[in-house]
Image 1 (cartoon, helix red, strand yellow):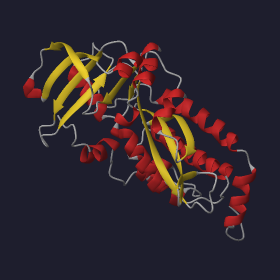
Image 2 (cartoon, helix red, strand yellow; image 1 turned 180 degrees about the vertical axis):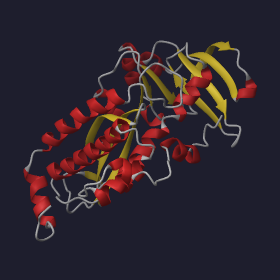
Image 3 (cartoon, one colour; image 1 turned 60 degrees about the vertical axis):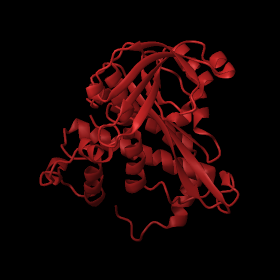
Length: 317
């Protein structure tokens, strides 16, 4: 780049602390719109025309003495990265950065619900008042039920037990506050994993989609876990150049922009390599005048599906 010496860490820290993080937020949002257009018809393993989102959060630990604005525990600071991932292409569409104390379920209040879309969440988001608001906005949710769920069965649909399904029921909540917060019926599906023998119980407000599809949708939620793992391993979001809130937000937004840019490049050039491989190639050839297709020509194709297959034994059909 023509620099005579390495850029000092303090220089990067000053830049991140002085430049408004909203600049990088707006840039990332524009990239996200472009990426979602490119991946609009991408197959994510479930035959469903609806848009499907996975919602989850990850915690990034910080030093309390250096980041006092992000309290988490008495001796530790942290920020939480709340992410809504479009499973067609694994593109993050909504990202909220909070201190470590904010519970994940509160993020449901910040979402603009898309009518007809599916929202896949773990049971940490099981709040019947918020789920009912999602239902009334026209969205569908799929989540895990807690063992202590107090509900009565209204109707049982026939199921093929050889597929792993145990039951497909329409239920109503019994608890006073639960029934008040969610007065409509819910669908409860029990499924036994044939490999582990573990029984899983799902709740949804979608009564038309086949029960096995609901199970497959919850399985696809692991894409957001893989997203968090990818950006933590490949991008710099665990060590920060600046210690202010603006510096942390800036660095995270830049990392998200890099992730989406790599996804755009991969799709536009039809590259048959994983995002991990592609960013490794870019990191060593960024300032070389070398066609990207040539750089990846000798790399064996590795897809995200292969990585996911090795980790998703929870709901293997």
